[in-house]
Image 1 (cartoon, one colour):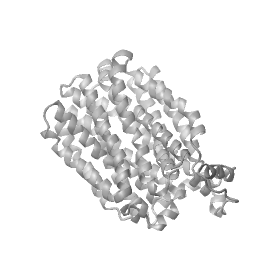
Image 2 (cartoon, rainbow, N blue to C red):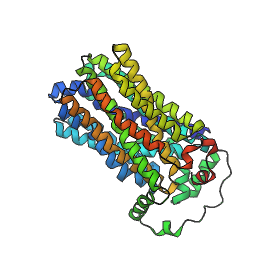
Image 3 (cartoon, rainbow, N blue to C red):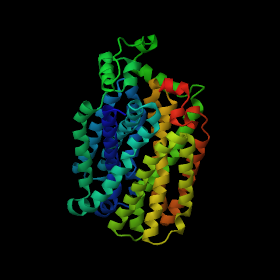
Image 4 (cartoon, rainbow, N blue to C red):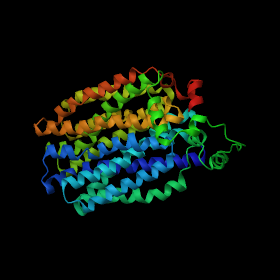
Length: 440
């Protein structure tokens, strides 16, 4: 990893930290918001995943544009959308207006998350690609953890809107930093060859200490003559080619099932703790410990996958996570509860390796489309999971019983990953098949 690569990957990590602030602000604000606005659990179950519905649209409509107009442009537009949605809560005076603003925020987040995964994969050495993708994505739970800590001080003093203002301001300030700190993806420059591609690619190569290219390789005629809409349609069709159809469908299932569990855990743990009799401070700590576990899981799964293969490691993490959810009802006492949440978070954190799966199995020309659609379809789970939790809470199902119900989707996610048979996922990164190295 050169200085340029470390700087770019570190900045991507920071942007994913902001995602944790942007998504989880509503979770930590929920106990106070529900009291001030007199929102019942069922309504809160609809309001809470509003950003996730936006993320689904952003992942399937905005993120694929990165394959045609560039990763960096998509990222800047997405950050502007997040800033508008987050700062707009200062003007929100009803549940419907807050719902609309959360949709806008989610639209931007849907463009950011797959773009970060693609950047991390394409700016990193092949043998460290899985770790780079998951390490960058680990910024999300760390941001969520820091949001929980900040909430302990900010919410009682500054009100529930303060977390949204923090996330929106940081997102807005990040837009000019993208142009300064992130080079355009070299894979995109070689594949699409926009104006000035050779000069920009050579600048990147010089930063890596490599020789300049005298000329770009010939661009396929189909790429020269296709419109952007046609290219997006072609990319989507490519996900269902004979080689990619099975992995694509299994990846969609794994995303949907694991995201249903993850967003239930992240968005409802503080509220469930509050309903179970914990103080606001204890409920915030429950969510914070969970997100700290997710951070540890995110950081470790990529490193282990580089040693043992993505499929084996991710399936194990998710399978053990399902088992821990089954055992959660046996935990008693605050210390045991927090320890259990931390362990569940670590295993659930293995989900983040699914972004590395997408970066591995999809070629450059459709990588953003593949990752974006997998994450977008996965948002169906992230929407239904919190809504199901609200449904269960409204019917007075206890915290342990709600955790028990979500062991099922996590187990299904583990089975979906274990069923993938792509050679890129079985071998350690350093021993990846030659065909995978040529593509990626």
